[in-house]
Length: 346
Length: 249
Image (cartoon, rainbow over all chains, first blue to last red; front, side, top):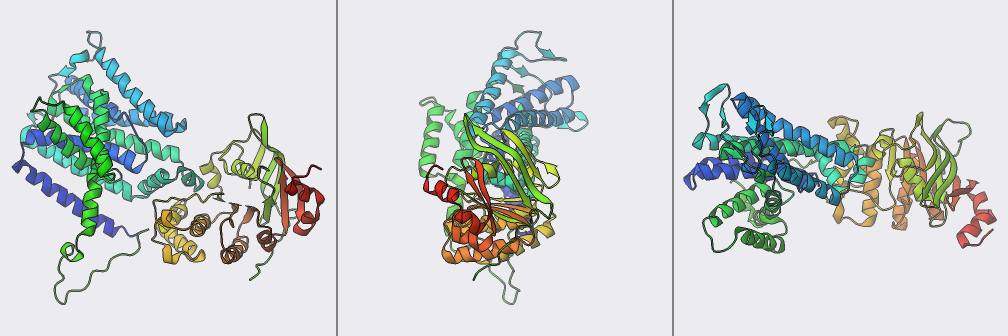
């Protein structure tokens, strides 16, 4: 398989993404944009494991909340954000790895997998709500029950606790994180590991008959998705400056699934688009009190499934495919050599 | 064109596959009932029998898709009873299932590459992919999505997946099903050629096809081996006629 066209595609996507992220502050505040970018990272975590691994996780919020809580607890105890950020990624990764191993080595079918992940996040939700007393503390960090944990140190420049990162700088950190995660996911999917993961999604039985251990690969992919969701949780904690059990809620889990469906499953851009569009719609709808937000978002989901089964990314992709070729291709200079396109995909 | 008949020779060469007392029960029903089976290196054996005789269940036990209730399976030097399918495949076992098991959302080339890549580097996988695609005459549809292909083409894709892994033991479950007579002729040639490199077990109903490729067949009935031997002898055996016609002996 020729890697060059894929590499070029990745660079083009990253450059386009960087340009959009750089220009976005011209149309919206960086405070709002930051949380949209965080949602995009979170959506990408589910988009990876569901869209490419075929693993429908109803409890992606568990890893998101775990990342946020880990960061808050570690930041209070350490007083600086560098190690808490790493822990906020590592703990959800490890938890997802263990949970994934139990589910996949236990040969749970898709339905039960959805039920188990949903139950896990609800257990977190119930447990965190029940940690109000002073007995529920990790080091100096009290878990705070329903009220959550407020007032922990936000992101700072590594090794410099006094140089806190907020406003425009925080948005820049979130934007870079999204680009890095996107690049990492693209690289992963283009690697043999990613191609086998897609093969397992397509036909797990055949992949096993080829000699691939589907359980191990699904476990690793699930853990990577957990780590990415954890990173989103870390950034959210630093943005909101408070973590509450609501991060583990059923509504939060459902929202991530809706972002992926509306944006377009099986693509990387789809979940990002879905999270940004629906996240911003939620922000705008929050400013009115005529109709309940969830009703409108529910209507958007239903209409999206009926009218755009492949999501916004699918519609955009189809429109791009229909566009006249001449309009899409840069004009070749007279005398310039023709570019050879690799015909060898595999 | 008539393909060369493969020889037997199980008695003089070491076995590549052996089962002893292999049993697989579902509830109280024994789909495979104490089967002793031996396959020599580079032997080609066809399994026949009426529907429900236990052939495909026997196959699934060999590949690890089903865990046998009792008995022993040995592939080469390894006792593989109860192993997972991926572990069995890594011993060099290539499997073609009854209904083509392929990745519909991927191209022909991607399907074959995935098989060729396991246990090899990228460069070796690419040349093995090219060779398998050429051998199965899939060049013209190499970039097509497998989900859009005809049944015959999907059968060939699955065979290419098996070939690309360079197995030492090949298990083919009804490879000629749904193929045209021309495709069956081509398939017979391919199987005979593969048999020069690997031992092959084939479950098949098409007797003309079986006569073309094999000299020894094993007849299954009610989960057991009814009779085993040269094709013509087995076909003359009244017990075989009885089980095919549903008569009780």
